[in-house]
Length: 380
Image (cartoon, rainbow, N blue to C red; front, side, top):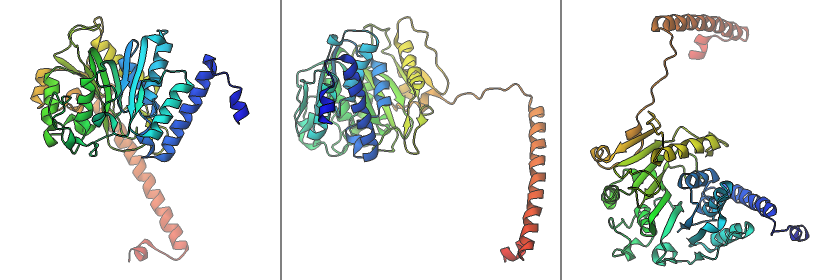
């Protein structure tokens, strides 16, 4: 095996891609087999692809403060290559607290020829020992641990990163969010995965923090995800997209709006326990977001799927950001058949089914009688 691997020309782009895809495949299979443990280092590929396709990190610094095995970085590089942008125009920054996971990340990057020198490890993690204290990133993409209660929040009550409120010690969701906002460049955007509770919870002052972030006009888009997307948890999750400059930086001014997308009905079950987004599903969500924020976009609300809500609407809902509250329920399509005609057809079908049921009941009684039983005896 060593001799075979030694013959692979890693300087060749095609060989790098093949070896990288093999490595990514094994990471995914290992994560699936490990279940909850696997989710600690691996974000399912379809979610990573969705985040990257929505943010389009084509130029500047890409940062992930809990980078796991580096899937966000790899997908960002793939997007740059697919659009024939310059790979040298993006730089990778990351941090990971688990040393084994960190090594998986560095290997994942090295196999693909991606510079991982700015991906750092320390056992304390991004909260207690921020490896990139002064760094401001144009793009931040992350999947932090859901509802983490063991984040040493009691040691960080006066931290300057908490610009919108001190997060509760029992839950790190808004600590992660504010850590990322703190590291966001003036024209930067971020996309992160959080548990659905972040959209509505008022525990420990979370509602006040969410309100402050909304009123600062930072929230760009919220996406509700379907269940069974993750290996390590069955709880529902969502995507937050936050932008520092929503007035007029590359896109139209949208600071008084938030786009809500309800994607809970998308995705395909690939096993009994796991779901993935298809390429068509990813394109539908990402294209909706792009059409909404583009200056020349042709975005329109779609009942049951997407809604561009004003800040006043969000205030009426007490700054709860659950997409289902805003997008509504899709209208049922009218098949054009008059009600009377439809009912006549349905009752005729029901009569036929009831008649068939009587025939089957008689056959069952007859067969039971042949072996010396009756339904009355069975009932007794």
